Length: 128
Image (tube, rainbow, N blue to C red; front, side, top):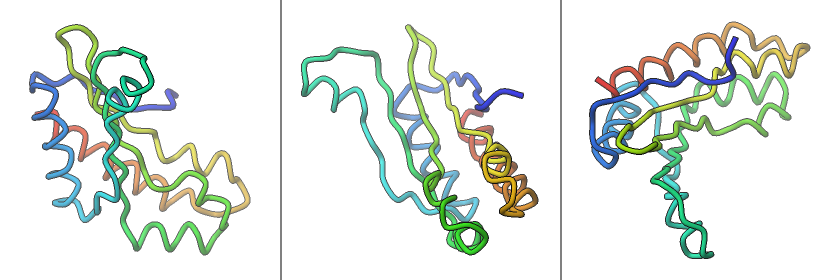
């Protein structure tokens, strides 16, 4: 199984970033931060195509996994990335179910699968 879930969108880059933000809110996730990685790299003299990482969080899910194993916090908040390759725009997220595999004694398999489902729906809705 891939570590990520990635879809291509017909939307323009900025439109896709806005759609992720909007769909995250509709799904009950709060956007904690938005990182324009390409701009940050450009400040240091590195050029690349657009890439933005949107950090999202749902307090109920975060509280559950942190109570199960505080070290799961190393994988929070959940990232959703919008990036361009040439004229193509993609939206991607990590498969949250892998968190349970990395912390097998935490007992978070069910909640990780639920989070993964929500994140996939955010990506799909944003890409549509």
